Length: 547
Image (tube, helix red, strand yellow):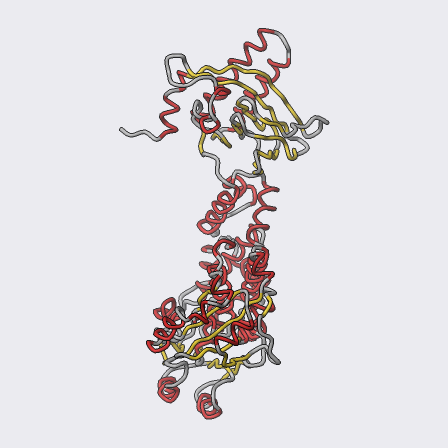
Protein backbone atom coordinates (compact mmCIF):
# COMPACT_ATOMS: atom_id res chain seq x y z
CA UNK A 1 0.00 0.00 0.00
CA UNK A 2 1.35 3.44 -1.00
CA UNK A 3 1.31 6.02 1.77
CA UNK A 4 1.46 9.77 1.26
CA UNK A 5 4.55 11.51 2.73
CA UNK A 6 2.65 12.94 5.70
CA UNK A 7 1.30 9.51 6.66
CA UNK A 8 4.82 8.10 6.44
CA UNK A 9 6.04 10.82 8.84
CA UNK A 10 3.22 10.00 11.26
CA UNK A 11 4.36 6.39 11.33
CA UNK A 12 7.92 7.48 12.13
CA UNK A 13 7.08 9.74 15.06
CA UNK A 14 8.30 7.03 17.41
CA UNK A 15 11.80 7.77 16.05
CA UNK A 16 11.61 11.47 17.02
CA UNK A 17 12.68 12.88 20.40
CA UNK A 18 11.02 16.08 21.62
CA UNK A 19 12.59 18.47 24.17
CA UNK A 20 10.70 21.51 25.43
CA UNK A 21 12.92 24.59 25.74
CA UNK A 22 10.57 27.30 27.01
CA UNK A 23 6.96 28.48 27.20
CA UNK A 24 5.61 31.98 26.50
CA UNK A 25 2.06 33.24 27.07
CA UNK A 26 0.55 36.54 25.89
CA UNK A 27 -2.97 37.87 26.43
CA UNK A 28 -5.16 40.59 24.93
CA UNK A 29 -5.37 42.43 28.25
CA UNK A 30 -1.64 42.36 29.06
CA UNK A 31 1.20 44.63 27.96
CA UNK A 32 3.34 41.76 26.70
CA UNK A 33 3.28 40.87 22.99
CA UNK A 34 4.89 38.12 20.98
CA UNK A 35 7.32 40.25 18.98
CA UNK A 36 8.42 39.30 15.48
CA UNK A 37 11.21 36.78 15.92
CA UNK A 38 13.27 34.28 14.00
CA UNK A 39 12.46 30.74 15.12
CA UNK A 40 15.66 28.90 16.06
CA UNK A 41 13.63 25.90 17.17
CA UNK A 42 10.16 24.53 16.52
CA UNK A 43 7.28 26.50 18.03
CA UNK A 44 3.78 25.23 18.79
CA UNK A 45 1.45 28.22 19.22
CA UNK A 46 -1.99 27.46 20.67
CA UNK A 47 -4.95 29.86 20.86
CA UNK A 48 -5.99 28.92 24.39
CA UNK A 49 -8.73 31.56 24.56
CA UNK A 50 -10.36 34.07 22.20
CA UNK A 51 -8.88 34.91 18.82
CA UNK A 52 -5.52 36.15 17.65
CA UNK A 53 -3.63 36.98 14.50
CA UNK A 54 -0.05 36.00 13.72
CA UNK A 55 2.29 37.28 11.05
CA UNK A 56 4.23 34.20 9.91
CA UNK A 57 6.94 35.15 7.42
CA UNK A 58 4.90 37.54 5.24
CA UNK A 59 1.47 35.96 5.64
CA UNK A 60 -1.25 36.78 8.17
CA UNK A 61 -2.64 33.73 9.98
CA UNK A 62 -5.87 33.81 11.96
CA UNK A 63 -5.98 31.61 15.07
CA UNK A 64 -9.36 30.89 16.64
CA UNK A 65 -9.92 29.43 20.08
CA UNK A 66 -8.49 25.91 20.16
CA UNK A 67 -6.56 26.11 16.90
CA UNK A 68 -2.77 25.86 16.68
CA UNK A 69 0.15 26.77 14.47
CA UNK A 70 3.44 24.86 14.16
CA UNK A 71 6.43 27.00 13.11
CA UNK A 72 9.64 25.40 11.91
CA UNK A 73 13.19 26.70 12.47
CA UNK A 74 14.01 29.52 10.07
CA UNK A 75 10.53 31.02 9.96
CA UNK A 76 9.72 34.42 11.43
CA UNK A 77 6.56 34.96 13.45
CA UNK A 78 4.91 37.28 15.94
CA UNK A 79 1.50 38.50 17.03
CA UNK A 80 -0.38 41.10 14.98
CA UNK A 81 -3.27 41.52 17.40
CA UNK A 82 -5.34 39.68 20.01
CA UNK A 83 -8.98 39.93 20.96
CA UNK A 84 -9.59 41.36 24.41
CA UNK A 85 -10.20 37.85 25.78
CA UNK A 86 -7.48 36.32 23.62
CA UNK A 87 -4.56 34.27 24.91
CA UNK A 88 -1.80 32.65 22.88
CA UNK A 89 0.64 30.16 24.37
CA UNK A 90 3.87 29.35 22.53
CA UNK A 91 5.84 26.17 23.26
CA UNK A 92 9.40 26.29 21.91
CA UNK A 93 10.96 22.87 21.43
CA UNK A 94 13.70 20.94 19.66
CA UNK A 95 13.11 17.77 17.69
CA UNK A 96 15.76 15.09 17.30
CA UNK A 97 15.78 11.99 15.15
CA UNK A 98 16.64 8.66 16.73
CA UNK A 99 20.33 7.86 16.23
CA UNK A 100 19.34 4.69 14.36
CA UNK A 101 17.26 6.63 11.81
CA UNK A 102 18.18 9.13 9.16
CA UNK A 103 18.33 12.69 10.47
CA UNK A 104 19.54 14.71 13.40
CA UNK A 105 18.52 17.68 15.50
CA UNK A 106 16.26 20.07 13.58
CA UNK A 107 18.62 22.96 14.10
CA UNK A 108 21.38 21.17 12.22
CA UNK A 109 19.41 20.53 9.06
CA UNK A 110 19.44 22.44 5.79
CA UNK A 111 16.67 25.02 5.31
CA UNK A 112 14.75 22.79 2.91
CA UNK A 113 14.61 19.95 5.50
CA UNK A 114 13.47 21.89 8.57
CA UNK A 115 10.04 20.31 8.61
CA UNK A 116 11.28 16.80 7.82
CA UNK A 117 10.91 15.46 11.38
CA UNK A 118 7.27 16.40 12.00
CA UNK A 119 4.25 15.37 9.90
CA UNK A 120 2.66 18.79 9.56
CA UNK A 121 3.57 22.39 10.10
CA UNK A 122 1.42 25.46 9.63
CA UNK A 123 -2.12 25.87 10.91
CA UNK A 124 -3.87 22.89 12.52
CA UNK A 125 -7.34 22.51 13.96
CA UNK A 126 -9.00 19.61 15.77
CA UNK A 127 -12.58 18.42 16.04
CA UNK A 128 -12.83 19.30 19.75
CA UNK A 129 -10.75 22.48 20.16
CA UNK A 130 -11.68 22.98 23.81
CA UNK A 131 -9.59 20.01 24.87
CA UNK A 132 -6.46 21.37 23.18
CA UNK A 133 -6.91 24.73 24.93
CA UNK A 134 -7.18 23.02 28.33
CA UNK A 135 -4.05 20.96 27.64
CA UNK A 136 -2.09 24.08 26.64
CA UNK A 137 -3.12 26.03 29.74
CA UNK A 138 -2.21 23.09 32.00
CA UNK A 139 1.23 22.72 30.39
CA UNK A 140 1.83 26.47 30.68
CA UNK A 141 0.93 26.55 34.39
CA UNK A 142 3.23 23.60 35.12
CA UNK A 143 6.13 25.31 33.35
CA UNK A 144 5.58 28.67 35.04
CA UNK A 145 5.83 27.09 38.51
CA UNK A 146 9.56 26.95 37.83
CA UNK A 147 10.07 23.63 39.63
CA UNK A 148 11.94 20.72 38.00
CA UNK A 149 8.90 18.44 38.37
CA UNK A 150 6.74 21.13 36.78
CA UNK A 151 9.09 21.34 33.81
CA UNK A 152 9.10 17.55 33.60
CA UNK A 153 5.28 17.58 33.59
CA UNK A 154 5.33 20.19 30.79
CA UNK A 155 7.61 17.96 28.69
CA UNK A 156 4.99 15.23 28.94
CA UNK A 157 2.15 17.69 28.22
CA UNK A 158 3.85 18.94 25.05
CA UNK A 159 4.15 15.44 23.65
CA UNK A 160 0.53 14.75 24.54
CA UNK A 161 -0.54 17.94 22.74
CA UNK A 162 1.43 17.01 19.63
CA UNK A 163 -0.02 13.51 19.75
CA UNK A 164 -3.52 14.93 20.11
CA UNK A 165 -2.99 17.39 17.25
CA UNK A 166 -1.58 14.86 14.82
CA UNK A 167 -4.13 12.23 15.78
CA UNK A 168 -7.16 14.50 15.53
CA UNK A 169 -6.24 17.24 13.08
CA UNK A 170 -9.23 17.64 10.77
CA UNK A 171 -7.73 19.92 8.19
CA UNK A 172 -4.37 20.93 6.87
CA UNK A 173 -3.58 24.66 6.71
CA UNK A 174 -4.48 26.58 3.56
CA UNK A 175 -4.19 30.10 2.22
CA UNK A 176 -6.71 32.72 3.34
CA UNK A 177 -7.92 33.13 -0.24
CA UNK A 178 -8.77 29.43 -0.40
CA UNK A 179 -10.54 29.72 2.96
CA UNK A 180 -12.77 32.48 1.59
CA UNK A 181 -13.45 30.43 -1.54
CA UNK A 182 -14.48 27.52 0.67
CA UNK A 183 -16.94 29.75 2.52
CA UNK A 184 -18.33 31.06 -0.78
CA UNK A 185 -18.80 27.50 -2.04
CA UNK A 186 -20.59 26.69 1.20
CA UNK A 187 -23.02 29.55 0.54
CA UNK A 188 -23.56 28.35 -3.03
CA UNK A 189 -24.51 24.92 -1.71
CA UNK A 190 -26.43 25.90 1.45
CA UNK A 191 -28.04 29.30 0.78
CA UNK A 192 -31.47 27.65 1.16
CA UNK A 193 -30.62 26.79 4.78
CA UNK A 194 -30.07 29.06 7.81
CA UNK A 195 -26.62 30.63 7.32
CA UNK A 196 -24.76 32.79 9.86
CA UNK A 197 -21.43 34.59 9.90
CA UNK A 198 -20.31 32.25 12.68
CA UNK A 199 -21.03 29.18 10.53
CA UNK A 200 -19.15 30.60 7.57
CA UNK A 201 -16.22 31.66 9.74
CA UNK A 202 -15.93 28.08 11.01
CA UNK A 203 -15.87 26.81 7.43
CA UNK A 204 -13.10 29.28 6.61
CA UNK A 205 -11.34 28.64 9.94
CA UNK A 206 -11.18 32.37 10.65
CA UNK A 207 -12.64 34.48 13.40
CA UNK A 208 -16.09 35.92 12.52
CA UNK A 209 -14.88 39.52 12.50
CA UNK A 210 -11.76 38.88 10.43
CA UNK A 211 -13.68 36.58 8.08
CA UNK A 212 -16.35 39.22 7.40
CA UNK A 213 -13.69 41.88 6.74
CA UNK A 214 -11.66 39.70 4.38
CA UNK A 215 -14.73 38.40 2.54
CA UNK A 216 -15.99 41.91 1.74
CA UNK A 217 -12.52 42.98 0.67
CA UNK A 218 -12.21 40.04 -1.71
CA UNK A 219 -15.73 39.98 -3.17
CA UNK A 220 -17.00 43.53 -2.72
CA UNK A 221 -20.03 42.45 -0.66
CA UNK A 222 -20.64 41.00 2.78
CA UNK A 223 -21.27 37.24 3.21
CA UNK A 224 -24.90 37.84 4.22
CA UNK A 225 -25.42 40.12 1.22
CA UNK A 226 -24.20 37.26 -0.96
CA UNK A 227 -26.56 34.81 0.77
CA UNK A 228 -29.48 37.16 0.10
CA UNK A 229 -28.36 37.62 -3.50
CA UNK A 230 -28.27 33.86 -4.08
CA UNK A 231 -31.71 33.45 -2.50
CA UNK A 232 -33.24 36.23 -4.60
CA UNK A 233 -31.72 34.88 -7.80
CA UNK A 234 -33.07 31.41 -7.09
CA UNK A 235 -36.48 32.82 -6.18
CA UNK A 236 -36.63 34.66 -9.49
CA UNK A 237 -35.74 31.48 -11.37
CA UNK A 238 -38.55 29.61 -9.62
CA UNK A 239 -41.01 32.43 -10.31
CA UNK A 240 -40.36 32.11 -14.03
CA UNK A 241 -42.12 28.72 -14.01
CA UNK A 242 -45.89 28.67 -14.31
CA UNK A 243 -46.38 26.09 -11.54
CA UNK A 244 -44.42 27.94 -8.83
CA UNK A 245 -46.27 28.62 -5.57
CA UNK A 246 -45.12 31.34 -3.19
CA UNK A 247 -44.91 29.05 -0.14
CA UNK A 248 -42.78 26.53 -2.04
CA UNK A 249 -40.51 29.27 -3.37
CA UNK A 250 -40.00 30.65 0.15
CA UNK A 251 -39.10 27.23 1.56
CA UNK A 252 -36.74 26.43 -1.32
CA UNK A 253 -34.83 29.67 -0.83
CA UNK A 254 -34.24 29.50 2.91
CA UNK A 255 -37.30 31.34 4.26
CA UNK A 256 -39.66 29.46 6.56
CA UNK A 257 -42.35 32.16 6.39
CA UNK A 258 -43.82 33.04 2.98
CA UNK A 259 -45.03 36.42 4.28
CA UNK A 260 -41.55 37.38 5.48
CA UNK A 261 -40.21 36.19 2.13
CA UNK A 262 -42.68 38.44 0.29
CA UNK A 263 -41.61 41.47 2.34
CA UNK A 264 -37.93 40.65 1.87
CA UNK A 265 -38.41 40.14 -1.87
CA UNK A 266 -40.12 43.51 -2.32
CA UNK A 267 -37.48 45.20 -0.15
CA UNK A 268 -34.67 43.77 -2.29
CA UNK A 269 -36.20 43.63 -5.78
CA UNK A 270 -38.48 46.65 -5.59
CA UNK A 271 -41.72 44.91 -6.59
CA UNK A 272 -43.89 42.26 -4.95
CA UNK A 273 -43.53 38.59 -5.98
CA UNK A 274 -46.91 38.66 -7.75
CA UNK A 275 -45.98 41.69 -9.87
CA UNK A 276 -42.60 40.15 -10.65
CA UNK A 277 -44.13 36.83 -11.71
CA UNK A 278 -46.48 38.56 -14.12
CA UNK A 279 -43.62 40.52 -15.69
CA UNK A 280 -41.40 37.44 -16.05
CA UNK A 281 -44.05 35.62 -18.02
CA UNK A 282 -44.11 38.27 -20.73
CA UNK A 283 -42.63 37.04 -24.02
CA UNK A 284 -39.86 39.41 -25.10
CA UNK A 285 -38.10 39.61 -28.45
CA UNK A 286 -34.49 40.84 -28.55
CA UNK A 287 -34.68 42.13 -32.12
CA UNK A 288 -31.19 43.67 -32.27
CA UNK A 289 -28.22 41.37 -31.51
CA UNK A 290 -26.77 43.64 -28.80
CA UNK A 291 -30.03 43.59 -26.80
CA UNK A 292 -29.00 40.19 -25.40
CA UNK A 293 -26.05 42.01 -23.84
CA UNK A 294 -28.50 43.95 -21.68
CA UNK A 295 -30.86 41.06 -20.86
CA UNK A 296 -28.31 38.41 -19.84
CA UNK A 297 -26.85 40.49 -16.95
CA UNK A 298 -30.41 40.68 -15.63
CA UNK A 299 -30.82 36.90 -15.80
CA UNK A 300 -33.66 37.31 -18.31
CA UNK A 301 -33.93 35.02 -21.33
CA UNK A 302 -36.12 36.41 -24.14
CA UNK A 303 -38.61 34.31 -26.07
CA UNK A 304 -36.98 35.37 -29.37
CA UNK A 305 -33.52 36.75 -30.15
CA UNK A 306 -31.26 37.58 -33.08
CA UNK A 307 -28.53 34.92 -33.10
CA UNK A 308 -25.83 33.55 -35.40
CA UNK A 309 -22.87 31.21 -34.77
CA UNK A 310 -20.44 33.80 -36.22
CA UNK A 311 -21.92 37.28 -35.67
CA UNK A 312 -23.20 36.55 -32.14
CA UNK A 313 -20.86 33.66 -31.39
CA UNK A 314 -20.86 34.03 -27.59
CA UNK A 315 -24.65 34.29 -27.17
CA UNK A 316 -25.24 31.52 -29.69
CA UNK A 317 -22.85 29.20 -27.86
CA UNK A 318 -24.07 29.99 -24.36
CA UNK A 319 -27.82 30.60 -24.70
CA UNK A 320 -29.20 29.16 -27.93
CA UNK A 321 -30.87 26.25 -26.13
CA UNK A 322 -32.57 28.65 -23.66
CA UNK A 323 -34.25 30.79 -26.33
CA UNK A 324 -37.20 29.17 -28.17
CA UNK A 325 -37.27 31.35 -31.30
CA UNK A 326 -34.12 32.36 -33.19
CA UNK A 327 -34.19 35.17 -35.73
CA UNK A 328 -31.17 35.80 -37.94
CA UNK A 329 -28.19 37.93 -36.94
CA UNK A 330 -26.36 37.20 -40.21
CA UNK A 331 -24.15 40.23 -40.92
CA UNK A 332 -25.92 41.66 -37.88
CA UNK A 333 -29.19 42.64 -39.64
CA UNK A 334 -29.08 41.66 -43.30
CA UNK A 335 -32.05 39.26 -43.08
CA UNK A 336 -34.40 41.77 -41.44
CA UNK A 337 -37.34 41.09 -43.75
CA UNK A 338 -37.30 37.37 -42.95
CA UNK A 339 -36.97 38.24 -39.25
CA UNK A 340 -40.08 40.40 -39.37
CA UNK A 341 -42.03 37.57 -40.94
CA UNK A 342 -40.96 35.11 -38.25
CA UNK A 343 -41.91 37.50 -35.46
CA UNK A 344 -45.37 38.08 -36.97
CA UNK A 345 -46.15 34.44 -36.29
CA UNK A 346 -44.93 34.50 -32.66
CA UNK A 347 -46.84 35.46 -29.47
CA UNK A 348 -44.61 38.44 -28.58
CA UNK A 349 -45.55 40.86 -25.76
CA UNK A 350 -42.64 43.33 -26.05
CA UNK A 351 -39.92 43.99 -28.63
CA UNK A 352 -36.56 45.53 -27.68
CA UNK A 353 -34.35 47.03 -30.40
CA UNK A 354 -31.56 49.59 -30.71
CA UNK A 355 -31.85 52.86 -32.60
CA UNK A 356 -29.81 51.64 -35.58
CA UNK A 357 -32.84 49.91 -37.15
CA UNK A 358 -34.58 51.60 -40.06
CA UNK A 359 -37.87 53.48 -39.82
CA UNK A 360 -39.45 50.81 -42.01
CA UNK A 361 -38.43 48.10 -39.55
CA UNK A 362 -39.68 50.08 -36.58
CA UNK A 363 -43.09 50.69 -38.19
CA UNK A 364 -43.44 46.99 -38.99
CA UNK A 365 -42.46 45.97 -35.46
CA UNK A 366 -44.93 48.40 -33.90
CA UNK A 367 -47.76 46.64 -35.73
CA UNK A 368 -46.89 43.39 -33.91
CA UNK A 369 -46.32 44.45 -30.28
CA UNK A 370 -45.15 47.36 -28.11
CA UNK A 371 -41.60 48.37 -29.07
CA UNK A 372 -38.91 49.90 -26.84
CA UNK A 373 -36.10 51.52 -28.82
CA UNK A 374 -32.80 51.80 -26.93
CA UNK A 375 -30.89 54.96 -27.84
CA UNK A 376 -27.61 53.03 -27.96
CA UNK A 377 -25.95 55.58 -30.26
CA UNK A 378 -26.37 58.35 -27.68
CA UNK A 379 -26.85 56.78 -24.23
CA UNK A 380 -24.12 55.30 -22.03
CA UNK A 381 -24.43 51.54 -21.56
CA UNK A 382 -24.97 51.69 -17.79
CA UNK A 383 -28.01 53.92 -18.28
CA UNK A 384 -29.29 51.64 -21.04
CA UNK A 385 -29.03 48.67 -18.69
CA UNK A 386 -31.11 50.48 -16.07
CA UNK A 387 -33.72 51.40 -18.70
CA UNK A 388 -34.12 47.77 -19.74
CA UNK A 389 -34.16 46.69 -16.09
CA UNK A 390 -36.96 49.10 -15.22
CA UNK A 391 -39.03 47.84 -18.14
CA UNK A 392 -38.88 44.22 -16.92
CA UNK A 393 -38.81 44.89 -13.14
CA UNK A 394 -35.17 43.90 -12.71
CA UNK A 395 -33.70 47.11 -11.24
CA UNK A 396 -32.37 45.19 -8.22
CA UNK A 397 -30.51 42.74 -10.45
CA UNK A 398 -29.11 45.60 -12.55
CA UNK A 399 -27.76 47.35 -9.46
CA UNK A 400 -26.21 44.10 -8.20
CA UNK A 401 -24.58 43.48 -11.57
CA UNK A 402 -23.25 47.03 -11.87
CA UNK A 403 -21.85 46.87 -8.36
CA UNK A 404 -19.98 43.66 -9.20
CA UNK A 405 -18.73 45.15 -12.47
CA UNK A 406 -17.35 48.27 -10.77
CA UNK A 407 -15.63 46.11 -8.15
CA UNK A 408 -14.02 44.03 -10.89
CA UNK A 409 -13.00 47.17 -12.78
CA UNK A 410 -11.21 48.56 -9.72
CA UNK A 411 -9.35 45.26 -9.27
CA UNK A 412 -8.09 45.40 -12.85
CA UNK A 413 -7.08 49.08 -12.56
CA UNK A 414 -5.05 48.38 -9.42
CA UNK A 415 -3.07 45.69 -11.26
CA UNK A 416 -2.36 47.51 -14.52
CA UNK A 417 1.26 47.01 -15.59
CA UNK A 418 3.35 50.08 -14.89
CA UNK A 419 4.57 50.11 -18.49
CA UNK A 420 0.97 50.25 -19.72
CA UNK A 421 0.23 53.20 -17.45
CA UNK A 422 3.22 55.09 -18.82
CA UNK A 423 2.87 54.26 -22.53
CA UNK A 424 0.34 55.18 -25.21
CA UNK A 425 -1.99 52.69 -26.86
CA UNK A 426 -3.70 52.59 -30.25
CA UNK A 427 -6.21 50.19 -31.78
CA UNK A 428 -5.72 49.25 -35.43
CA UNK A 429 -8.39 47.46 -37.44
CA UNK A 430 -7.33 45.51 -40.52
CA UNK A 431 -9.61 44.78 -43.48
CA UNK A 432 -8.02 43.06 -46.48
CA UNK A 433 -4.66 44.86 -46.83
CA UNK A 434 -5.90 48.18 -45.42
CA UNK A 435 -5.24 49.51 -41.93
CA UNK A 436 -7.51 51.82 -39.92
CA UNK A 437 -6.95 53.64 -36.66
CA UNK A 438 -10.11 52.54 -34.90
CA UNK A 439 -11.97 53.35 -31.71
CA UNK A 440 -15.66 52.73 -31.02
CA UNK A 441 -17.77 53.75 -27.99
CA UNK A 442 -17.07 50.57 -26.06
CA UNK A 443 -13.31 50.78 -26.56
CA UNK A 444 -13.18 54.48 -25.68
CA UNK A 445 -15.33 53.96 -22.59
CA UNK A 446 -13.41 50.99 -21.21
CA UNK A 447 -9.80 51.62 -22.21
CA UNK A 448 -9.51 55.40 -22.03
CA UNK A 449 -12.27 56.41 -19.59
CA UNK A 450 -12.70 53.52 -17.13
CA UNK A 451 -9.11 52.21 -17.15
CA UNK A 452 -7.51 55.62 -17.75
CA UNK A 453 -5.05 54.47 -20.44
CA UNK A 454 -3.40 57.06 -22.70
CA UNK A 455 -4.52 57.04 -26.37
CA UNK A 456 -1.70 57.25 -28.90
CA UNK A 457 -3.97 59.00 -31.37
CA UNK A 458 -6.27 61.88 -30.49
CA UNK A 459 -9.16 62.80 -32.77
CA UNK A 460 -11.90 65.44 -32.66
CA UNK A 461 -14.35 62.71 -31.62
CA UNK A 462 -13.80 59.76 -29.26
CA UNK A 463 -14.96 57.35 -31.98
CA UNK A 464 -13.15 57.13 -35.31
CA UNK A 465 -12.14 54.77 -38.13
CA UNK A 466 -9.32 56.53 -40.02
CA UNK A 467 -7.22 54.95 -42.81
CA UNK A 468 -3.51 54.88 -41.96
CA UNK A 469 -0.30 53.71 -43.60
CA UNK A 470 2.52 51.78 -41.94
CA UNK A 471 4.75 54.84 -42.14
CA UNK A 472 2.14 57.01 -40.41
CA UNK A 473 1.67 54.36 -37.73
CA UNK A 474 5.42 54.34 -37.16
CA UNK A 475 5.43 58.11 -36.68
CA UNK A 476 2.65 57.84 -34.06
CA UNK A 477 5.02 55.42 -32.27
CA UNK A 478 2.53 53.80 -29.84
CA UNK A 479 3.81 51.93 -26.81
CA UNK A 480 1.18 49.22 -27.33
CA UNK A 481 -0.78 48.08 -30.39
CA UNK A 482 -4.15 46.36 -30.17
CA UNK A 483 -4.89 44.71 -33.53
CA UNK A 484 -8.35 43.68 -34.71
CA UNK A 485 -7.94 41.43 -37.76
CA UNK A 486 -11.01 40.70 -39.85
CA UNK A 487 -11.49 36.93 -39.99
CA UNK A 488 -11.68 36.27 -43.73
CA UNK A 489 -9.15 34.55 -45.97
CA UNK A 490 -8.06 37.69 -47.82
CA UNK A 491 -7.44 39.69 -44.63
CA UNK A 492 -5.66 36.79 -42.90
CA UNK A 493 -3.31 36.39 -45.88
CA UNK A 494 -2.59 40.14 -45.80
CA UNK A 495 -1.92 39.92 -42.03
CA UNK A 496 0.65 37.19 -42.68
CA UNK A 497 2.42 39.40 -45.24
CA UNK A 498 2.30 42.42 -42.93
CA UNK A 499 4.16 40.63 -40.15
CA UNK A 500 7.26 40.14 -42.34
CA UNK A 501 7.16 43.67 -43.76
CA UNK A 502 10.30 45.62 -42.65
CA UNK A 503 8.22 48.78 -42.04
CA UNK A 504 5.99 46.81 -39.66
CA UNK A 505 8.95 45.25 -37.90
CA UNK A 506 10.49 48.71 -37.40
CA UNK A 507 7.58 49.89 -35.24
CA UNK A 508 8.67 50.13 -31.59
CA UNK A 509 5.66 48.24 -30.18
CA UNK A 510 6.30 45.39 -32.64
CA UNK A 511 9.98 45.20 -31.70
CA UNK A 512 9.08 45.06 -28.00
CA UNK A 513 6.42 42.39 -28.60
CA UNK A 514 3.69 44.68 -27.35
CA UNK A 515 1.17 43.78 -30.04
CA UNK A 516 -2.05 42.19 -28.76
CA UNK A 517 -4.92 40.77 -30.81
CA UNK A 518 -8.55 41.72 -30.19
CA UNK A 519 -11.53 39.65 -31.30
CA UNK A 520 -14.49 41.39 -32.92
CA UNK A 521 -16.71 39.74 -30.31
CA UNK A 522 -17.08 41.43 -27.83
CA UNK A 523 -15.11 44.55 -28.91
CA UNK A 524 -17.58 45.58 -31.63
CA UNK A 525 -20.66 45.19 -29.43
CA UNK A 526 -21.96 48.00 -27.25
CA UNK A 527 -23.75 46.51 -24.25
CA UNK A 528 -23.34 45.80 -20.55
CA UNK A 529 -22.30 42.18 -20.97
CA UNK A 530 -19.92 43.04 -23.80
CA UNK A 531 -18.12 45.46 -21.46
CA UNK A 532 -17.64 42.73 -18.88
CA UNK A 533 -16.26 40.35 -21.51
CA UNK A 534 -14.01 43.10 -22.86
CA UNK A 535 -12.66 43.65 -19.36
CA UNK A 536 -12.03 39.92 -18.93
CA UNK A 537 -10.30 39.69 -22.32
CA UNK A 538 -8.17 42.71 -21.44
CA UNK A 539 -6.80 40.91 -18.37
CA UNK A 540 -6.01 37.90 -20.57
CA UNK A 541 -3.97 40.14 -22.86
CA UNK A 542 -1.70 40.92 -19.90
CA UNK A 543 -1.58 37.64 -17.94
CA UNK A 544 1.33 38.78 -15.77
CA UNK A 545 -0.96 41.37 -14.20
CA UNK A 546 -4.13 39.31 -14.15
CA UNK A 547 -5.72 39.40 -10.62
